[in-house]
Image 1 (cartoon, rainbow, N blue to C red):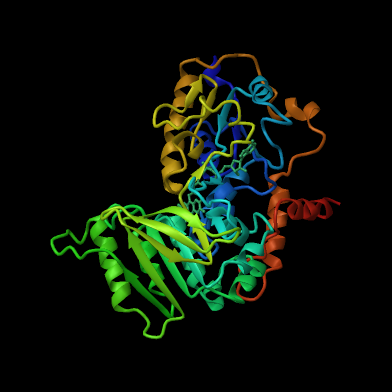
Image 2: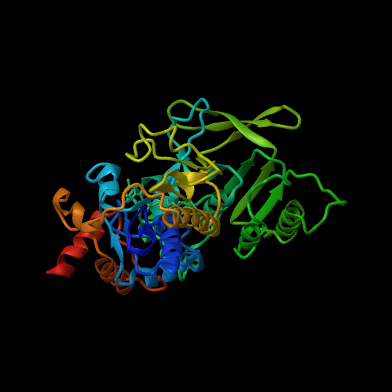
Length: 429
Ligand SMILES: Cc1cc2nc3c(=O)[nH]c(=O)nc-3n(C[C@H](O)[C@H](O)[C@H](O)COP(=O)(O)OP(=O)(O)OC[C@H]3O[C@@H](n4cnc5c(N)ncnc54)[C@H](O)[C@@H]3O)c2cc1C
């Protein structure tokens, strides 16, 4: 009977969603063989490359996934892009269950005039370089003294924290030191944060705002109206409370002045070739103003990589949904690929549990398309011209990163994927 044999399960994407999904299926069906593929040599997706470098406690969630990959029947197959060298059809022929968890990692751009000017950057330009996903550090020497930051969510607050921190504030992080040094040679003096919502509708967590108060030498101001009758425990009330506290405890001779603008949205970026100012609409009064700026960083969310072979040509199938993760019995999706680029790591756990339950239901009710035994990863070997990066190879590269850490850093991350692959070769020989 189908429900009794050991199944071959493929999970595409080793970010938190793919790992939580593998973990949930492994708990219920401990003898099934699970292969977690990733196009990158390193596992863990945006935990490694998105979560801020000074939030190591958030990144520490990977330890529970390390324990998962230590099991004999759970394989990490890194450096294999599904959709090009191995197709989804190939996976379906060789695995009983295929779950897509490839995320939505592309930083959105603002579609307004002037977006292409020099000095206009996205959150990805900053975050992915600080996290050593890419080696581009030029952006850090061109940010200038006066920056406009567009967006009020937690990623915008990660970027604000980076802009106003000093070198010693990075103790215990794994920041890319070349990027940090480049930036700190000429750091910012003023940051204006444009938040389209009013303060009560803003997305940034009060805890993230509060963290800003631990940084020395900053003055804070805001355009929000006081509201005396608000529940201080509501999200808006907490946010107000924190911003008012930040303003009350501001430094008198600040290194950096931070101004929160609520109900403010950019309408165009102005300048010839190089950005000079940002035209801003006050959404309450409908008045336009202009803010002089050396650069703009937009942190307005993330979307699917439209060149991804999983997404490109399948846009309708991969549209955001809160409904089922079942594409058809035997093929599923979870995480940001399913729900869109919203929600923190714990939200992906809840999503993965729901999708795992759909998989288990299809197994238990004999809905999977084929009852024949599947070869799993072995069936793909004729298609591949190299071995994947295994989990033990990744562990060795990871240990090397920790060993190479500079003083006051938890690791020295290899930059990009090739540097990791270059390490893995000597480890093998
Ligand atoms: C800048 C930033 C900061 C964040 N900070 C926090 C935070 O502090 N706390 C928090 O809780 N959440 C944070 N989040 C949210 C969190 O990172 C996401 O909720 C989570 O990573 C989404 O998980 P996922 O597995 O769906 O996608 P991802 O983490 O993006 O993982 C997708 C994986 O799929 C792989 N992949 C893609 N295409 C293929 C393919 N064709 N073949 C094989 N593999 C493929 C990718 O390489 C990647 O490893 C942050 C997000 C961003 C963008």
